[in-house]
Figure 1 (cartoon, rainbow, N blue to C red):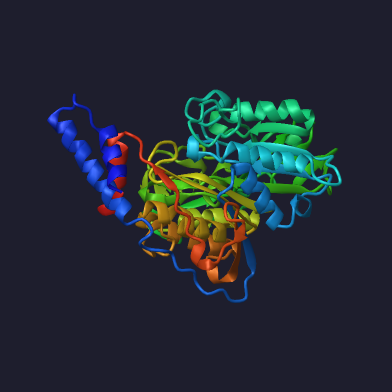
Figure 2: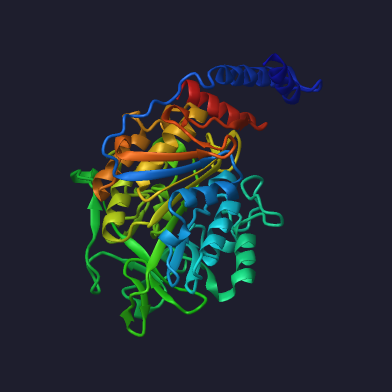
Length: 463
């Protein structure tokens, strides 16, 4: 232990340091020592399981490809989920890069498993999302499409989502499509039906579209409401997909199945949100025109706010807790809920979606129930590594607990882990894990950014 921290201290310190910088680094080292001394001190206790309604599948301590293949094996195989003629829509989160995006190797592996399923595949695979980065997301230097990953790619010659998509396109031609959904404020188009072409449907009760809204239950100046929005788009093969209603052809909807895969990462996200993963990934399906600030527009149409300005006051909590979860839960219930949710936790960000400190947790989790998945990922993967109360889903005062609970209430999901069976396999040991082995402790990478480490120490000990 002493040798480890001596090495860390040498890395942080040079003979050219000023006294001020020396003291800063000494303070950081002391904080890191205190954090490390608590590692493993508190093991999450799993609630007794009774009459489980869902199963959560996990694989740990393999490569991203190995973990993904094992998870799908535990879930019954890709053939159980995907049919030969299905249209498969994969929704990743590429608003960020590094640990803020799903692991690229795991994502490629999933596409390969669909394309190469036993019995053949004649359908299509689509990677699509709205990263809310302007009119040209593929070239934005603020998203994971063009920016090179420092970690979480794990494919030789592939360093970002553009390169992964190009590789899949070369391999599978018109069987694979990449679609960027654009906010109306960034060049997208408002549409009412598939015949109108690609764009966003606003469920505000006009143009033959029903009103599907969600409000915060408050009155007066703090009352807010949002509406559901969803995309209609066209694949490279010419297939028209309505996210809510399904595949559309020649003036009517077909019976060709649309399977939606929510492919998420796992990270810290702010003091007003706590964590980002499967549930929050739904925000990349909706239109966020109007911006994040409810006091500076923040509206989609009329008095309806978007999914970010509805629950929050820009980067701070809004007037009513948990409303992010209520809005997304309403979306799941009334528009569409993913057929499977996959969380790639090769790396998890302890205080950032792109930068250290991070932990390499080497895990992949999946479930048909997104709230249960997020609860488990927070309690047994993110929280044991960060030790931030923001990430503890049982912390009733925390924003994570509040929005997961409200989401479950709105969509009929499960916040109670006692209703969820966990099937977890450790590839390193070659056996299934018991309840007391579920906490995943990864190797930490602290980085050398003084502000980032100070932010972590503040949230850990004073936040």
